[in-house]
Image (tube, rainbow, N blue to C red; front, side):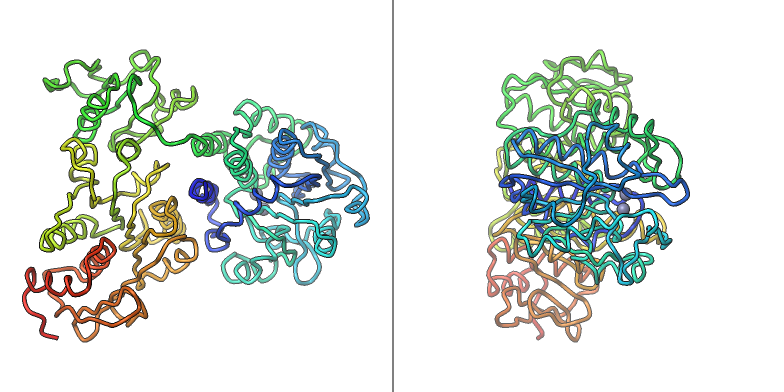
Length: 578
Ligand code: ZN
Ligand code: ZN
């Protein structure tokens, strides 16, 4: 349950407008907010952010507010809305009748148990309200945030959802906003809430909260694609504008409708439990490369009916002759009626066939995700921009020298399906790419390693933060008892420890650590449990130090004791020399 909500938290943290929100996210606030709302009786919801140029309300906020209100109504809660006088019409257009009164007495009068703000200005240090560019918008904002300041003394639970640092709720992460957000000094909201939910777009934060409520309530409370589209159209007809362009269009924060619909679909998958076998299930495999073939074999073995679509033409392997085949391209007709689609790594997930099947509600899984769900083996997953394969191989050698070999594979090596076909149930050491991590749903390594983080393209900060978010999906399903191994020399990784539920171990090339692995005078030192420090031996120039330290720590997490690691070192890399 907790893992699925962490996963939802990660999904809504996508930061398409590069506002650097990732460091603002407070671990577990999403789950705590949702759990509290499940107990709510009367919820007062506020939203509405004025756009100075257009002197109108923006498209971010009200759709999320009303969707959350509707979800809560389905759970039997009483709902009321409040917004600025000049934004009343926007709310009415999308089916909400806001109160005109927002004097603090209404909290008592309405017996409000929970107060929720979605994309609602919160006063800055100087008592005024600012937009993200630092422009003063005070004349267009009514002081509804006062309710949140009063709520505390009245035992009303408060929740704030925001995407920029200037909204109600962000007072909870005030210092972070000052240091990490552009114009933070000036715009940072001083209005805290009990729980703050930070997302790339505030509507997404609301949809995320609805998804979390759905997980807790055991029912899908998310709005449908049609509802989301219709709400935006009505809102724009009533005068709302896109917050970025200032234009009258259904975009939200400069993003087209499609990106919200995609996000909500991804959220919906978090409500789907992992597969309990595939007997009799119709599975379509797109791409007949190494992993496509391996997964098709595994699926057949597990009793599924398999169709394989391949864009080239190639010979059909004998043992896969009972599958249906399509060659020379991918068509919708061929995939008509499938229950699940498995995408090979080389296949573009945004191709129209995949989009169409997704829109029809067909789950799209990667080979790694499907194989994992079928077997749920013990996995050491290793990601990073460089060194994944080397680390996997090093861990394989260590485990073999210890006398308990593990099977290695993953991205660009042997796919998990292939390893499972041999009958082994693990543990496995797998190299995992960003591409694979983006489609992770229930994949949960027992030990996760992030070696380093480099931007995908140029040395651009936005790529770096987005890469960090994607890499952090490697541990989003982990819980107590699982391990996360991180590189302490990569300062961008430092916020990850507090987002992790299990135990975190660090390694460093240039400084001693209280717990983990590090290098001192060209020697590798190990202290994974915070106890005695062991020297394993001299650094070897043919082995990348980072990869080696990560592999040693992973081996320790797999149960190789420190003394055994010393012996293994001697066997593999000669005597200690410490
Ligand atoms: Zn905002
Ligand atoms: Zn926004």
